[in-house]
Amino acid sequence: MSHTDAHSGVDQIADVLPLHNDGPSSHSSTSAGSDRILYADIGAILDGRTPEPLRPTILQRTDGHALFYPGQVNLLHGDPESGKTWVCLAAVAEQLAAGNRALMIDLDHNGVVAVVGHLLKLGVDETALRSRFRYIDPDDRVTFDRVVEDMADWQPSVVVVDSLGELIPLYGASSISPDDVTRVHRRTLKPLARSGAAVIAVDHLAKGEQARGRLDPGGTLAKSRVLGGASYRVNLAKPFAPGRGGACKLVVAKDRHGGVRGHCDPVPKPVAGVLVLTDGENGSVSWQVVAPAPKAALVGAGAPGSDLERIVEEIVAAADRSGAPRNYGRDRLKEHLKDLHITASNAAWAAAAKRRKHGA
Image (cartoon, rainbow, N blue to C red; front, top):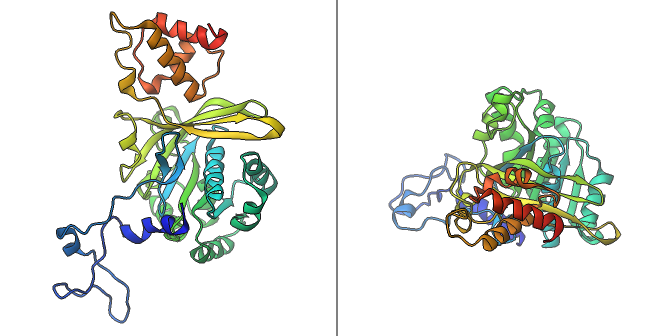
């Protein structure tokens, strides 16, 4: 995707409505003494000249559909070491490989050495890192404001902000105050998105069992309300470890424009994709975001007269795509794939688990 493509989402949507022009039948659309357009062009809507629906273009799945919206603030939240940062780095690696620019604002102190090392493992070449990747660990709001201003000219395709838990206090604000969160969002994240970037903010889960049952991050619900893109809860599927890869699921918590849910199973908490890391030779790491198996292909798998062999193959394929460990038994395999709503007999699950473990 080119820089122009990344910014077209911002230029065309204007909060999803085309802006008013100064045609002969219009009311005044600019403020006194300025050229700023204030109002949506209702005539364009009535004339059928509305823009194309905003669609996600960043971090493509194996089926070609993507997860993050350009020109919008997107969110990842989950437990520590659940794979959130790996998802962000995969998005950065994808955009650098496409010839675009990327910025990482590392408030969570991952460290530039570790970040660059991970990107090299993910296949990013040194030339791209030298010329089209920027990293910063700002320690005050003045520095962060300078970064926001700079990005208006540099125009990256993706900006990672890790994490909101550090960003909000940086501005003397509280994560449990809706007004504070909204104020910080408008001052920092929203201007970054106006640069054309898909902003990927990282946050943590709420504390307490009842709160954790929701798909919202910790703190005030304003964190989700202010988002213009997609929000995902990241669930660990296979622990990330050197030499062993890892995997995590991205469960849709919010999708304002519907461009993600439209390519997921129609369930309340669909899995939008599974990030799978596979260790290769010489310390390299290959990655892919696997599209979940469609529910329609698996529902009814336990019905009388169904083909047991076909069912087992479907379960095995779904497990492999999701990155499920090969030593999972029947019950752990069912739990791992519960978001896919697979209906099958216990015999089919047991046979699938045995096949993955022993190859028979």
